[in-house]
Length: 541
Image (cartoon, rainbow, N blue to C red; front, side):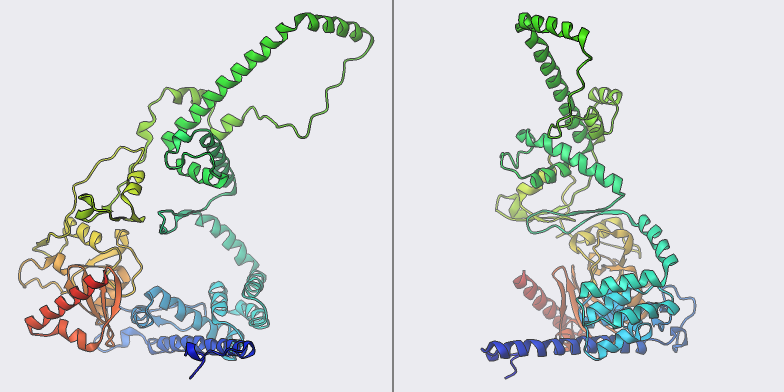
């Protein structure tokens, strides 16, 4: 038995276990090197110009072409070849393209680093990151980075190797690095992570340092208010919230500017009233001891004739500083603006958002269940209520996906597009990652090609597949076959004979034998194959 593959054969001795761990490092590097070589070979197989292929039609929209995926000095590759490689590797086409780009850079631009990989002296993932980082360097300058990285790859940690590579990149092209700094300032953004299993998301922002400071200060200000107002946080009414929890709740208020402004104005008004009350109390206290104060005052006047005025007391470094502009800074508004907004109707400032919630009928009937909120993820009904809290809600009629629609003509009507997007959360291509909600980058394709002279009702739910633009081009020009085997299931055959079924549950490899049932000329055989697949899908669900 091989201890590396048979868990029952693992060595009991610690020394032998460590020896096995060392051997596995070498084995892993061998597999990674072979993976890179296969990607390079695939690129070589698709390095010829498509215009030289027999039957190539010049001027055909979306046809294949040669492109550069690596840096300067790397060979060009056919643009549409990455989809089939990605299907074989069970990854998206973009991941396959990145692999090819990295290995071409290593072989043609970073030969010393590539030699370290061939000697199994370093990890491929580190070398690939170096290749990606150096892709924009001119061919005549990238050698400086190659020398620096090859000297330490496999000898230093991955982080230190990449730090050395980054320093060498700057040294190799100082002017180019300055241009990148300017370009990075144009890559500011605000993004969202995926929703986790608890219904929480992470907000990721890349903003100017000054804006970040103001956001942080505003979050602190709102957190201070929420700490004293449990009535404003019904889901977290306790007094034991940590500062991080309060700041997270405060950050959520930034999404509701009208309510946030009202909260800040209310807090400022309350603080102003408290200050006035405190001033009135302080003014009343000396009257109670007026006699004693008078005597002290007389004594003080006598001493002032003989001595200079007492110096100002030294400030107490531990005393809390009071900034008279703190309120206006926290709201970034003048006093005049504050007075104006106090009398204004701020409800019109609330944002407008369209929310799609998918529910099973049983959930609406009272059976406990889960709702799927597009762009957010699975939620309990109580959580869905929280999503629309503090807003004016307009309910759109329910879209029953059990209905079927078909029309005459080539163009898909908006109703079919909308229903297809609701049924299929991502494009209907093997290992696709692009969500159908981004309609600008999604085409709606006829899996069975539209025939202008064919039967009516060729366009509809029964013949519609959402595809990304490049995937659509590859399917059209490279001989992919796609068969819709259900309202939300498609059978794919790649140009070199790989079969895959794509449905809302993902991508499923199937054998040639199983695929024959779907493509059989016998209608009964096709029906049985589809019934079998629907049965398998229902069991998996």
